[in-house]
Length: 88
Image 1: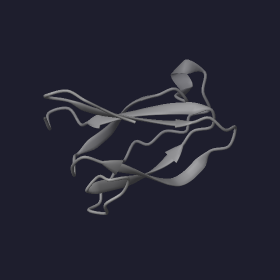
Image 2: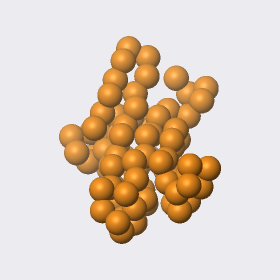
Image 3: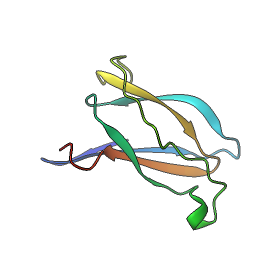
């Protein structure tokens, strides 16, 4: 799911299964840099700690977007991705 305003883009990716999903590719609007704004699987929230600290956008079109990145989706979790601070 992609949410966009005039100055900010947030991508929300959910894994509603009890199994982590490594290697999940998600489409991105541009090359970034991108960061994981929030993961419901963060240990601070009682999750198992499956996070994506190093998002690397690639010029690989995916899901109708010109760029993409490969994530590990946490089990029963939701990740919110956004532009890295200072890159807007």
